[in-house]
Image (cartoon, rainbow, N blue to C red; front, side, top):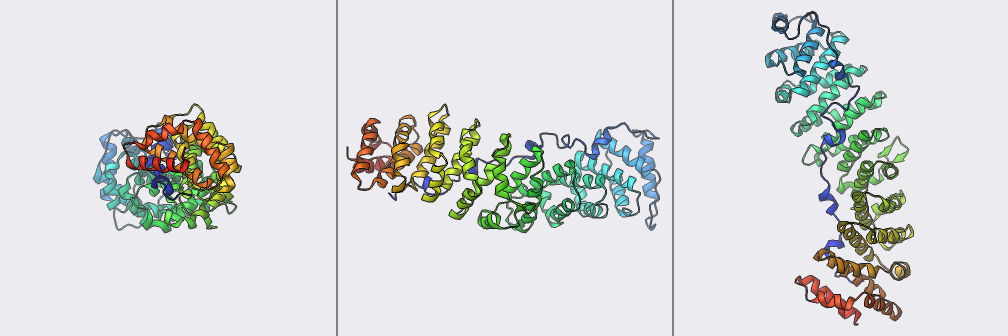
Length: 493
């Protein structure tokens, strides 16, 4: 086979990578942070509060301020009466953006955390509601909260009252809000919040509300730092967390966790991901087997999320492509070429092109109808961009071409006709070079076999290739004209 193949197709393709945008969490949760958590604890705050005093009255706030100021700090037990009523009222005021007093809030937080173990459970739940409102509506106050070691204190609150679903959901909601700001991600990491997530999921059957919040939180933690490599040990725990939540029926949860797993896969440690027995779901199913199941899902977003994971594996070595074949992904991805979504078709072609890096892998693709599907896409009512992806994928296939593939790949499928068609409809140098390289690989595979060479000449002559090649030899780009002259010498019309 000719060795002078453009670098564009001589390596695993990474064009897919640059087109993958880090999707903001709102794209998953399609909400203003909170409305998707349909039964979250804070929605209860929208119920009219029956307060003994008017929460909008200055006297209401003044009474709490006086109580906090006069409290004996040496006391070992809480002493403020009607604290629950005050917390509900302040929560409502913050939500309506009708009040904010930094000093009073600081005193209140200090008081509640100081007596956390002595407060009545109902008061603690109302305190957690208050924290939710503070984190949701007062992000400008985060620096102050961080200086008060709010993450550590909420972590302690979680550890002490993990059995309370209301408190657990509230604490994780606060962590989720804080994690929306990348500058605080490292703080969450250093405080082992990842382990707290894992322990919470393992100890109790979590509500869908909590799972949604944890999905959002893990996504923010995965994508919120410029370089995740220093946190790779945390990444293993995060992977376990994400994998555990993949079998939830909620689309938002599945797409969010697929995205997190994509960012957690370290390309320098693909073996860890692909062959480590710890990377299983419920100790039964390999993550790639679950990804393969996603291709049968009716939702396009889930399919695309799963394709991203297969793409990253396809960038690896031959053994990683073998695993994609072994787990059934390549067969499924070939089937995805029939999808109506151009995005799914394009991503599938990129992955297949990366996988056909050996004759054995090409055999597998041919046996599963790759050429039929690829020609169907190219000759159908596809966009020029999708046709271009077909040319690139086919050119990558010719790099693994051997004599054994000649009949099915060249003679029956007539791939030379597709390359000539591409030379006719595309003016881009990139596609021209790919098509010329594909033809060059086919001719190189023919070797000295006169029958094969004669077949190539008949097909190329029928496509007017002599005129095409004449035109290409005068191309303004030197690499194109050089390759055209090489082909002219090889075919010798």
